[in-house]
Length: 268
Image (tube, rainbow, N blue to C red):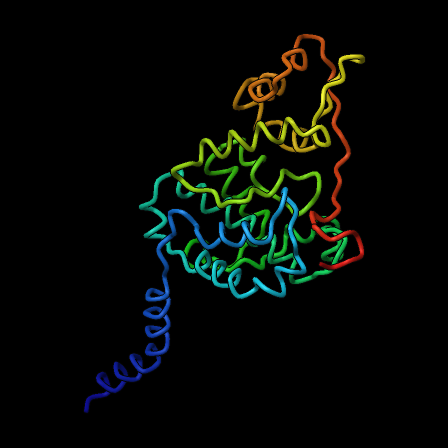
């Protein structure tokens, strides 16, 4: 046997595990669900009025959640590229919300998602979300929100759909986001968020519109879509006095306490 043949066979032997891993990774790819039915089932069982029964979900729904998260993580670039913009957008919104729930469960019980990690906001920077087929590794919640959703889609209504596990966040919807209904769902979330007086309200006596800090943090997104912040929120407010000329805008403090159905200090 020639030296060249020996070297070739040794090279193939070394490549064997790598090639096998590649084949397994390809075989493990899961087509993206168009309706995210598993996530809808979880939300229907463990979410009420936007609040999550984290303790009960940990006891009764952990395998269901793990299976759904696994299906998200096994999505592949080729299948993703064939999907419509609405399917891709729904995928990432659902992924953000579902993995946020997982992160909370990993540290539950806790008073706030901001208690995770040493520094404020560390939870959102932690790369705990495996996305090998789509991102080549693990990503963070910030990566999904800023690096993918805001960068690739430029859809301001995501800010009414992404739920950071806190009481000042938009309410966690009791169903998954689906491409076929996505535009209606996002509009519904926008109307509901701006109609919630704990998050946004207009005081006619002082001619002041009090808005969620979300509108301060992501102001450029809303202004890019409508020219100004009042013009954007005016699309979803019923009281047109709130966006009339001369109205003063102030931003409310953000309540980072956990969106838990259990009272503080009690896991349920």
